[in-house]
Image (cartoon, rainbow, N blue to C red; front, top):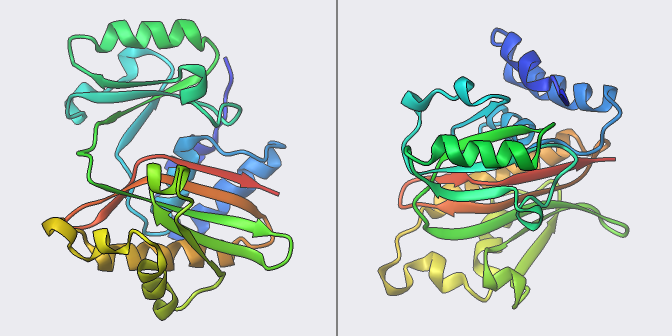
Length: 239
């Protein structure tokens, strides 16, 4: 069975300062000869940078799932550094009830016999945004922001800045997209703008710290709530 041991090493590093945890994750991936991180590794890296993510469990066997820590329904995903586009290969199952958990796990295990499986509680769908880091041939590492879903996929409604950014840059990015009114209380939609600004600043700082190693990062979707944000899915590639 495939093993990518960064998660275990992170658990062993509880007494280590957060920036050391970040370094441990990145260096472990590079040492293993990989460029892609698994979802749990990206989320561990984000957490160590103060970026909120979903609470997740990564397991090999059904009996390793701690159901007491889950709020149902849950989402189940294949978790592998070799499968970045999970939906395309049928590697994501949504709205799994407690009664269906074992059956859906068995199906996922049969489909992906050598990969780990990530289980996490479903998040209330709120306003979705996308935040990314992209290495541009001309400008170097840039940070991207936009509303998720159709706004990004169809309208390409995104804005960019060169890393690192200042707070005023982050605030301007929120105002520059065409869908900005949604973030400004359109139809009484309540979103935590300060949490988005904070997210952009932390992602920029993470990118600046690993500029020489980071190729790209994609946080999509990020759910913006009335209070706070949460990264629901995340991908990262190293150089």
